[in-house]
Length: 316
Length: 319
Ligand code: HEM
Ligand code: FES
Image 1 (cartoon, each protein chain N blue to C red):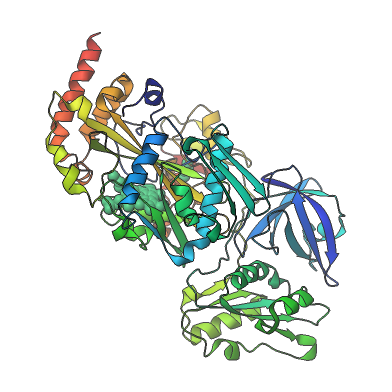
Image 2 (cartoon, rainbow over the protein chains, first blue to last red):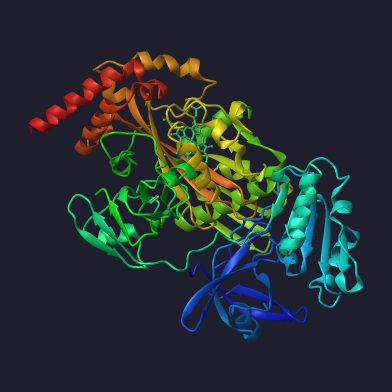
């Protein structure tokens, strides 16, 4: 994934546990523009293992000379945030193109943004766009204290009375009911906060009659199956057995073994590489089949899906 | 205007097997321009201009919330053209001050990015007047895609006036078979996941009588009758295979989906210079189910074309 190579040009300590990083292109290519709410995957290699952590882009979508991300040093760090907290200016990183699973609703009449702690990060780029288009919004932001509240000064200065802060140390609490009731029709809610707070707002919003489609929650990219297992397939027509190693797709393994299969997209979206399955349990990883089709367990998209059982017998 | 030998060679022949059925036939675009500037560029741009002069109704739409998508489109097209055809197009960016040069149209404009008042038209109209592709911009919201902006000069019997604002599945309502096959649900799920920097492509096809690109719903009375003029004698010259090369690209700032369509026409005479194409087109048409023959509007000259193709095919086989 060297979609973009960046260099760290500035690091700021925002709170005791949050650092922000300014990233510029390291190879002269322009950074990809992005939409508000986007994140990028940052590649981190630790002990020869590559992991990809997703971080929201906090900089302005209208600024593409640099990106900014903010990283919380996780308590039970898998190593990713710890690594980023100790590196220095000048370090190069491989990152992905921006992706967005937390977009602004283009037709909303009003936007209510709820941030808990580091959850402020994807909301920052949204604020830039909302204020540019002078769309009505409110930001409610809770943190432990003013010193633990990243971007406090910036937000206060730039957005003034449109932002309300709640510091738990001072026993200030967000009331979901107070915030959500009596809002105009067409209000959309954006939640990026710890589970308990997010769930509370979600339940309250539903109870107040907000449609499901007007409640947006940040979920970072679909679960990646890192632990791919090898398996074997038996070709029913010839009885030939082929091993699919953990770092190869079924499609690629068949190609190598001299059984080219039809394909088009190679990412599980088009159905071209479908094969019939006569026995064995399939692990569907595509975005093509409906739940009913998956449940039938009788065909597989060989470019992405794998086996749950040790072996599959396929109709080939 | 007919195709040069070079253009015939490069024609995007749409079939990969002897029978055609609807599927989610999408492929990644790699190392290729998104927009095609070819020998028909100037004549097609002129034709589009003439059509647009008669009025924007049913030809150009951009709902107010598509502003960001408009600028995204302008940026993506300018970068694409300047990258792939540097001899004809160039883009100079000094911060927000951009200089755009289109040597093919003898045009050089300086404007401020994201400032609509610095351009003679809306950004989407400005740039789409300089490409031969029809373009739809789909807003992605609330789990769906909506055709909320578009420019359409060369449709195959559909209408932007009627379809603007519709969702992806609504727009495909008239298409037979594919809904039952689940094609559109799957295509939509796929399109919603198209990522920045990873565009996709698919081909669609039909047939057109005479080398006519403008076959809209509104002008049907002008061209519909041509379908009854096909004879064995004029078939090779009159009947054209019409292929749409469609692209799907994520627009970065707006998160909208850009859907450009490039329409190519090739007469059966031109196509039959390639025996493999002649044979395959013949097979595909022979195997085409009745409802698709009807939907694609081939009924009135279908038999004539089959006979013509089978002669070509046999004559070739003799030598
Ligand atoms: C992304 C935006 C897309 C738009 C705006 C769009 C729009 C349209 C329109 C307006 C028609 C004509 C319908 C009519 O007869 O009134 C059509 C036909 C069709 N579309 Fe799409 N389409 C899109 C993408 C796709 C994709 C991804 C597929 C993939 C399966 C697809 C498959 C088809 C098929 C099979 C037809 C019938 C064409 C024929 O047989 O001549 N479309 N589309
Ligand atoms: S090749 Fe498209 S789903 Fe496998």
